[in-house]
Amino acid sequence: MEVLQTSILTVSFLVFMNGVLSSPPDDPVQCTSGNRNCTIKNAYGVFPDRSTCRASQVLYPTTEQELVSMVASASKSNTKVKAATRYSHSIPKLACPGGQDGIIISTNKLNNVVNVDVDRRRMTVESGVLLRDLINEAAKNGLALPTTPSWWGITVGGLLATGAHGSSLWGKGSAVHEYVVSMRIVTPARAEEGYAKVRSLTELDEELDAAKVSVGVLGIVSQVTLQLEPLFKRRLTYLMKKDSDLGEELIRFGKAHEFGEVNWLPTQKKALYRVDDRVPMNHSGDGLYDSVAFRAYPSAQLASSRATEEHQEATRDANGICRSAQLATKTSETSAYGLTNNGTIFTGYPVIGQNNRMESSGSCLESKQDALLTICPWDSRLQVVFNYETAFSISLSKVPSFIKDVEKLVELEPQALCQLEINNGILIRYIKASSAYLGKTEDALDFDFIYYRSKDPLTPRLFEDILEEIEQIGLFKYGGLPHWGKNRNLAFKEVINKHPNANKFLSVKREYDPQGIFSNEWTDQILGLRKDVTTILKDGCALEGLCICSEDRHCAPAKKYYCRPGKVYKEARVCAFEG
Image (tube, rainbow, N blue to C red):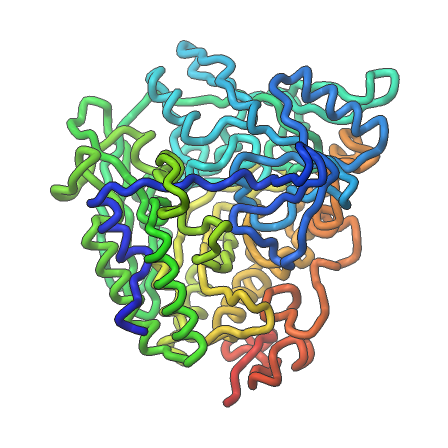
């Protein structure tokens, strides 16, 4: 099986050279009778608890006026409603209406650029506009959104709702919501107001700090105006170094480079530094960053890679997983991490290119249909790639201690984190403190982990306990804030208590949606409006992150996985193999 191992990073170089085409992902909302009797999934095809989200119908407004009418109808009948986006990339159940009688309102057709004011450097777009189209339209007008999420298949409304970000401690920071200067949001209203109304918010309105990171519970955003900057270029070099003194080096690096980010490979004791800074437009270079993570891949290759992963997990082949990780690291380096100097070939560092071509990408969305011969790796129609994603931010002052705790675990289990390194290691990005009520409370580093998930919810993973302990160390020992659009259930345990302005947010929520038609059980849980039921206690619940184990049955005792204290963080409770 090791011979068959072809990681995503390995095939990416072949795909890039051969120029194969893809089948862009399907709409996450599917109905059996026209636009009625519907289900909604996230991009990965499964929510953290593997439940099915249903709705009575889906609606597709094409104008703000139509959106107001739809919200009014739901408000009048007290019907649950949720917004859905084109590719539905939020992992938790933010898009599920409350029950099968609820309604989904898709922003797919609210995807127009409304206005570009070049003189004031402002751009107004509808909420369904993809990030790809936003940054490219801005560039056509000589403007730039300085830093963005790396995946451009998210909509403006979706990325704002979840606080999506790039990487920077400079200026306004890396979160897109920091560039919002005004917003129009459709909310329920009193009968005398027609049951729905458009609220127009500007920087003078305190409520904007609630609306620009809202987890979708205030209403549906119709338009957003962003403050942009003159278009500039970036100069980018990838540099692999030893990870000695990483905790302190991370802080120095973020202050030295405007758009720097790091991929940490703890098993290999290396860190890959993305040295990324702005330069004036008169610098020569037409570079392009086409991330290897967001390209199209042959379905058969992805299936082979997954089969090898499953075999390695089933046979506890840690050596094989670590060899795969080293191969992935080498292949990624060989393909220059997705960089080309002119859009075609890589000739050397530094790579210089326009801002809109150097951070966000997602070429698998731009290809023609080919009957699923090639796909975006996570495409749920085939489910050949099936992973967890855990992401949390830790304040800068606590980062060195967190890094040391992870290093202690690696010393105890040197092969435990090879699985992460198949997916390019631990992605580390910089985020500034925000005035948004549900934004980041301090300048922080965001740690993002992608790792193997079994298709059987009762099957444990190799080194299950180590990743669970890191998750609990970050979230609970160091008070990490989970990314609203990622993570397993346990990450949101009492999360609202970590936000000092939570009461201000909930006050706006009560004013905007007193009936709670935009809320569901999940959002009520994470906002602290119900007792902690983000925890689902049942056999095997800890394996899926639905609980923190307190009994052996929460793990997999029949497979020799038992609930035990952590190795470094003794307060942790993890599923450990004792064979």
